[in-house]
Length: 363
Image (cartoon, rainbow, N blue to C red; front, side, top):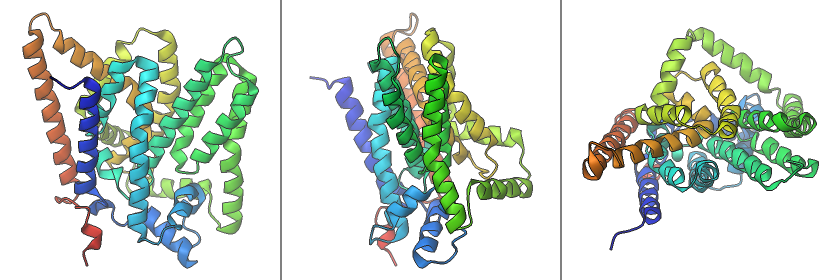
């Protein structure tokens, strides 16, 4: 008796999470990150001008509560968010596209090389992906539950507070907040303005406090980013290439299918509201010169790419010429090559080494 699709995806997801944990816990490339240094500066009372205190305070404060070494603590926090983003992404994709696309989400996205490298890394990239997905899911959930009045002001207030709080994880989460604002704005301008004002209130209050207490703010980060862009000779074409590498070939092809072959106008509006700000920030981010910058837009790429992958697998499994057996063989071949490619990319980008979970116990 065969296993169901749901059981198969659950087994695969569990294996891949454990695989990632064993091979890339505190990866060598990210063992000493800016976020780790920010926590150290905060605990020691020195280096108060560390700019991450101005834009990513939530993870910094969470990390101070643990007695474990800072990189280990941040890696555990990142891993918890990695686990949480799986069901959040699943239910988001299911809400938009149905069961088949939802099952395709972990199959397509969890093997991404840069997601694997950062799943248990001491930085804010993976928590930010979870935050973006949660904002998208919560916004759509509230919208779908409202009847004639679409959204009440009462529901906009907690939605805005949630977005503002999650924005303190990493500043790029605000692209999801802005995407939600655009979506609400299409229906009711007043509610859209109220939502955005509330969502930006918490980050704004923190910016004022951080500037007063630590001498840093989002303006400090922008200035630093511009300086790095000048130093490393920012080139839009090079950044676009990094973005494509970060997304990966199979995921990129699936994304194109998901965008081109979705004929639901309302769903396309939802996707584009979140997609355009996220991709624009990823391509315009001046301080990251590596494929990891694609992670900035992952929350917005996940739904349409998952749908596109479901289109691809369904088309091959029911192909008029290949038939089910040959079509299934092609799917397995493509997917196996994609998995091996991403594992190889993770290995290469981890200084040609794996990072076993017991690495932090070694002297």
